[in-house]
Length: 239
Figure 1: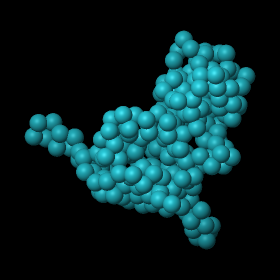
Figure 2 (figure 1 turned 90 degrees about the vertical axis):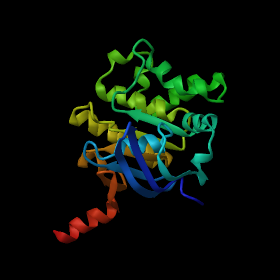
Figure 3 (figure 1 turned 30 degrees about the vertical axis):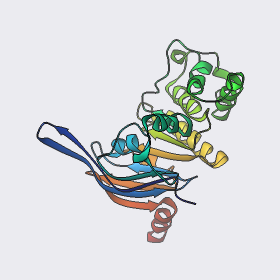
């Protein structure tokens, strides 16, 4: 079975007249279905740009990107939109919840663009909220939730259409340490219980270490790609 995600020498650059700004430099990686991967790096390293490319939110300048074994450069705009809406869930730092809609209605939003029968929407949204421990908040509006609850609602929304992969871009960035820990535990549970593929973008080591594998990026290049278990074993051996 091919990897869920594979990039081969992906480059990304921005052009402003004669000025060329390189962002990603020959990024090659594979992510298999069911992996929990953290892409880590300092601000400006290119990690969020990589997420946007992998999530069909941005185009790459050169190289190859295969999703489920198919080269994505051959996708039409309509095909890219279908993959993005049906096979990918997003969790962003800013939550992106509709202020005047209930938590339940916020979670149902991705279903508007799906082929799932409308009769199933409420049940799917309720189950998704139950999976992140927010069943008691379904009729509340976002301004009635804590920061951690808002992010868990965003995770429920990402899950509701049963996507192949969840992209979480700095999901703890707007949270205090306790709320951030709860959000990461929620993502871990989603991964462990449902076998969901999760790709996490972060600059925080503690957040990245909830994943099984960490890819470090600096100046648009992969510096290191290692399994967490290997890292922990090495630390234990050194001690």
